Image (cartoon, rainbow, N blue to C red; front, side, top):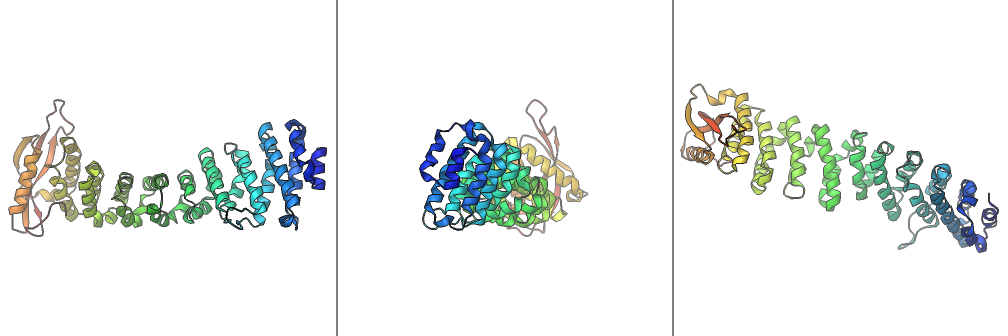
Length: 413
C-alpha cells in the first residue's frame, strides 16, 4: 500500500487524509484494492457507528479511491474489492435515522454506488454488482433504492440477462412502490416470463397509480405478454377493459385484447357491449373492436349473428376507407357459418359504393319486423375488395334471417 494511504488508514489520521488528493492517480492505482479492504475492516469495527473521526477518514479515502478508479479506468481490476466493501454495508443498518439523515454505512454505500453502476455497459463489473444492487432495493433506504433503480434500468438495456435471475426481487420491489423499476420488466420478461406472470394481476392493478412514463412501461410489458402468452391475460380482461376510457391507454390495451380474443374469445364475449361504447367514443379504435367481434363471433353461430348485426350497423356510419376491413370481417363470419344465409338466399341488390343505403335498409328492416326471425340484409361477397384500381367497389348483397329478441332490438347492444 502507498505510504500515505497506509498512514491515513492505519493511524486513522484525519489531518493527513486531505493530502491523498495531492498524489497522482497513477501513484496509488496499484494499492486501491488493498486500501478498500482496509476501509472494509474499519467500517465493520464495533465502534465505527460512534467514531466520527473514523467515519470522516473513510469518507475521504473512498472519495479519493473512486476518483482514481474512474480516472485510471481500472474498475475491472478493483471491482471485486469495491463491490466487497459495498456488499458489507448490507450487514448494517441502512434505514435513515431522521429526515435526510443517512446512517454511516448508507453513506458508504451511496458514495460507492455511482462508481460501480455507472459501468453498466461492462458485463464483468455488472456480473459482480447486480446481485448486490438488487439486495439494496429491499433495505428501506429510499434514496439508495432510487439510485439503484436508475442504474439497474440502464444495465437492463445493456445486458438484460444479468438481471433476469433477479426478476422476482425486482418485480416485488415494483409492487412495493419502486415504480422506476417498471422499465426493467420488459427487458427481463423474455428471459423470465413466469416470474412476471405470477404478479401480472397486481401489476395491472397499479395502472391508475402510475404517472404517464411509468404507465407506458407497464403497457409495453402487457403488450409483450399479449403477443407471447395471451392466455395469461384472459383473467385480467375485466380490469383491462376498465382502463379503456383513458385515451392514453386504450390503443395499446385494445391491441393486447385483440390478441387475447384470438386465444380466448370466450373471455371477451361478456365485454362486447363495453367495447362498442369505446368504439363509438374513439372511432380510431374501431378496427380493434371489429377484430374482437369477429373472434368472438367465430365461436358459435349465435355469437356470429350478434356480431354481424353490429358489424353491418357500422357500414352506414363509417368512412368508406374502413369498409374494406368491415367487409372482410363480415365475410369471415358468414363463411364459417353458412347456415346464416339459409337455403333461400338470393341476390337482391348490386350496388356501387352505396354503403349508407345498405345500412339504412338494414335499420328499417330491423325496426319494422315484429317477428322472432327478423330479416336482415347482409353483405356477403365483395368484388375486388381492395379496389379494382379505378376506385369503384362492387358488392353483392344477399338476404337471410337473423333471430332477434324483440322489436326493440338496439343496434350494437
